[in-house]
Length: 334
Figure 1 (cartoon, rainbow, N blue to C red):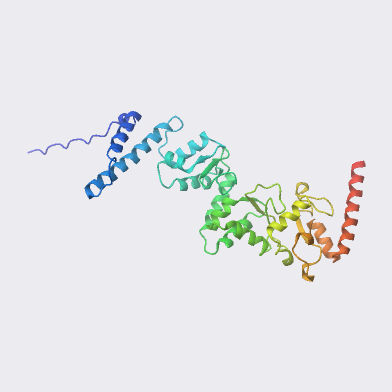
Figure 2 (figure 1 turned 135 degrees about the vertical axis):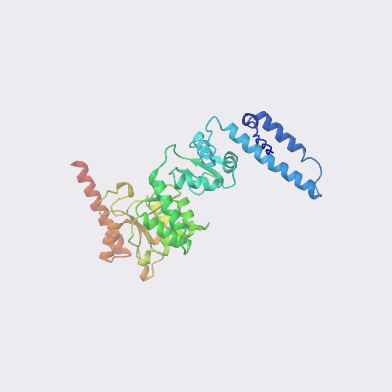
């Protein structure tokens, strides 16, 4: 006696399941089941939950259909990238990317695009003009150097210790190179990463520069550890807002020689803009704006070597400015 052959399993017609009209019809059918009063019986509750599951599946199918002119990829990451590329340099919302990807962990896929593939994707953490739930693909082409930064950041992020220690490790790893607030936030794993970064500068004495602390060429969300050499302890207690006001007052330039960061040249001694106490801090000089002046690192070293302060400092500064003007006139006439 021969055993009966098993009936082959039938698969739903692919073209039918992908037909947007039929998908919308199925969604409308499930929506009709959700009308009425709140369910109290467990059978009805389950029936409505299953309807919601079908609705979710239907919206994902519609999402894939409507983005199919851009990509037919099944992978969520590829669909996210295709959508971001479609709106390159334009803000798209997290809700859009959730709908396009069809998964809850779309945020991880965005991080993979940055870390593994080097796409520069900005958010509200790295750009002040964006909301926390907005994303912008800044360039169609990936940046391998940025990808490497994210890979290093990912390794540091997994280390034990404080958020501040991880921020400092990333800054030191990329000394002399620009990092974004988003990269620092990523390794810190704490919302207060900006304050911790400020403390690295103000308390630790590390030369972490921003647009407001000596590097006007940086964007508002960019940071750079300029050197592994730390500033003197007496210069560490200046609050960021005071530091910024002094730099703004002095035009982000050295009051002694008019040097600024735009004139920086590799191999030359002048590399940094710093803030100097007119009345030395150790002798009771305050950290107020009135007692502070902007100098380049060379002029700063000179004035400390001469150990002048108060009225003697102003005399030195006047002579320094005079020599600078004479040198500039000589160069212009040459």
